[in-house]
Image (cartoon, rainbow, N blue to C red; front, top):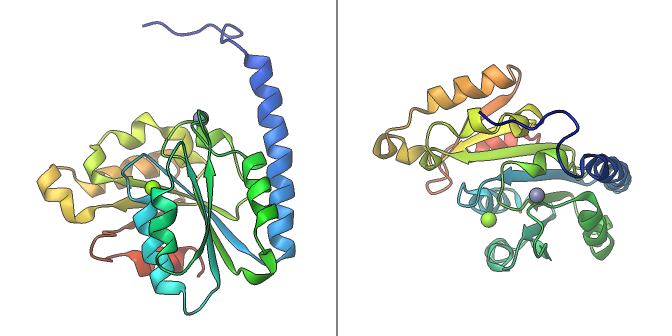
Length: 220
Ligand code: MG
Ligand code: ZN
């Protein structure tokens, strides 16, 4: 097995500076959102796990109760933002170009473009990726990881950091468990080995199953 020796990873110092700068900006974002009384949620997960579908379901369910906005992070397209916008939420798109995660600086710019006094709830859809979003807090009240049974049964053990830093885990596409031959209880056990206190909700964003439980877990 090949592993980098300590200090051998390229740009390790540069990375520390970047992470420190991101953390400061995330704290500023958190303060801004608190000042306007906006409840904010960072939705993370792989491409195809169901982040957009979950936001769509939550917007449908909660739009009578809250004024909702969404920020969509995507490398190149506006497909997801358009999907969420159809349900009546205000949507702002961030195209990250080559960046494989959102960072607090991009979110700060997005917040400056939103009228925060007319928003109660903000969903931020992160770029589809289970690795580096873990290192880049955005300043949201809660971080949610969405995984789906269609990603196979090893998704959790291969991405421990994102679960360690999450406030809620959602196991989506539960309607496909049997077809995929993936046991959601095994996924849940893996999550709890990493973070015993983490709330786990099983959903099918296709049928709507479990979505009310997600809203409840988010305090909405
Ligand atoms: Mg999406
Ligand atoms: Zn990245």
